[in-house]
Length: 412
Ligand SMILES: Cc1ncc(COP(=O)(O)O)c(C=O)c1O
Image (cartoon, rainbow, N blue to C red):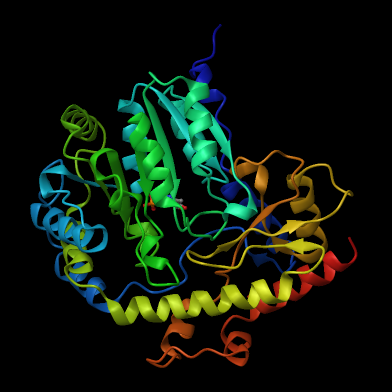
C-alpha cells in the first residue's frame, strides 16, 4: 500500500533546533549540566504595559477580521513608515500567528523559485518545499559579513533564468550569523534590475545593536514583502503574533494570501491582537535600549572569550546569535562536531549544515541567551552600563559555557 503521507512531506526532516533540545533534555535527565546555546529564544519578560493590556482584553472572545484588527494594522503601518520611510497601508498588512506562518503562506501562494542566502534560517527551505518552490542556496562569506554580494546575486538570478518568478529571502540581523547586511542598496539594485520579489524577514531588526533599523524596502519598496512580529524584540514568541506587509503593487498576491489565511487559521487570537496595539503604539525605547544593551554586552563577552586562532567568529551586530567556526580536521561534519562538543563540554550548539552550509564546513550556531533575562533586566540602570562582573553575576551559564568551549577548542 502506498504511504498515507505525501512523499514531499515525508521528506521534511525535523528541525534540528528541536532535536538538539531533546538531546539536551536527555542529558539533563541523566544529571548532566547542559549549557543551552542551541535554542534561540528571547530570555526577557514582555513589557509590563503590554502584559497588562493582554490581561484587560482576556475576556474578548469574538472572531476578528481575517486580515486582523484594523487598529493594530494601522499601528504597524505607522511603525513601518517610521522605520523604512515606506507606505504599506493597513489594507496591505496581514496579522498572522507568528511571522513563520506569514512566510509559509507566501510560499504556498507563490509560483516560482526561491533564493536563500547561506547561512539562512532553518525553516526557509522546508517552507519552500511545502510550497513546491525550487530552492537555490546562495553562498556568502565572512568577508561580506555573511550576506550575498550584488555580483553573486546577479549571477544566481541569471543561472535560474531571467524570466522566472523569483523570491530572494533576506534576514538582517541574521539568524544564524548575528551579523547585519551592509550592502542592502547594492542588493536592491540587482533585485530591481531583474524585477524579482524580496521577502525581508525583519523579525530581529528592532534588535540591531547600532540602533539603525535597516530594511531593503528603503531602496526597493515596490516588490518587497516585510515580515515581523513580537517574538524577538518583545520576548513574546509564545504569543504567536506576527505580521506581513505586502507591497501595494501585488494586488493578486494580497488577495490570495487573504484567502489562504481565511482557509487555514481564520484569524489570530483576539486578546493578543488587542495587546499588540499597545506593543506597536509606541517605541518602548527604554525597554529596547536595555534589552539591546544586555544582548550586546553578553554577545561581545562570548565573542571576546571565544575567538582565537582555532575559532573564527564575526562580531555580534544584532539578534542573539554568533556563528563560531572551528578549525579542525578531526570531525567530518558539523553535526558530528556539535555532538562531540555536547558530550565533552555540555555545551549545546547547532550545526551549520542546518543553515545551508555544506556538512563539512565546521561552523556552528551559538545562541547566547542561556540566562535569566528578568533578573538581568531588573538590575541594569537606565544608562545601560554592563561590565564583566555583571555578566558573571547574571549570565553565569553563558560565562561557564564559553570558558568550557574555548578550553575545548584549544585542544583541536
Ligand atoms: C530568522 C527567523 N525568522 C522568523 C522566525 C519566526 O518567528 P515567529 O514565527 O515567532 O514570528 C524566527 C524564529 O526563530 C527566526 O529566527
